[in-house]
Image 1 (cartoon, rainbow, N blue to C red):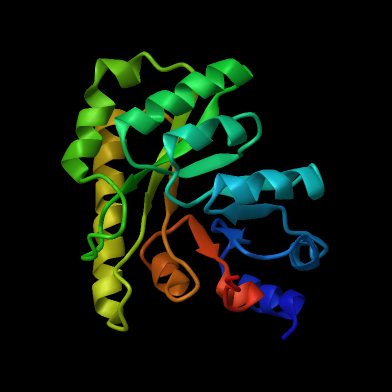
Image 2 (image 1 turned 60 degrees about the vertical axis):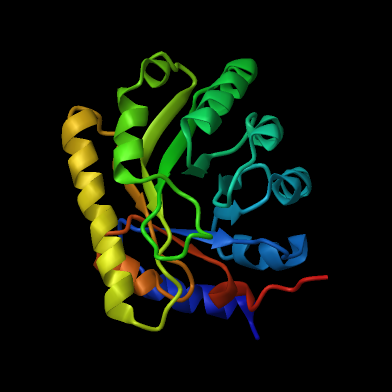
Length: 223
């Protein structure tokens, strides 16, 4: 298996205006560099404890995306450098990100994660909870976070129409939230949906970012 070839094949399927986030969890710096040397700079991790050592070992111009469930006590490790946190699933977590952003003297870009799948194991807020967050005084007072859009994970199923319907729901939520809370805010424009198994469905339904790991690097290696 050639990682660089896999990467180039996927890139051919991604239209202009959609950003590919190469997900590197469990992958070695050497494997990551094969994609970096193709000119790619956006990489994603699902755990802070994997992201930090890779950030230290790999080139400085990599833009790191946190795509996995983020525990509040891990935010401080990535706050100084993370390019985008896709997985903000509570006001509590956003408060911590804002606090760590203040300490790092930067504004941290974030996406709000909505729960769109059938599986209860997946994280995310309901549409109503997201609106409550955006209407809260606590959110309005935050100066060290910036919400750039939404993220969601579809049900893991072979039924493509079900996946498409869930992604469509996220796109509809995005449009409603954009109109109600971010109508004048050009930064609110990202919809992160679609992974190795369903990124093409995500793109068809309006995704602006796809998170692809195993289709580039091969299946994850667990030790």
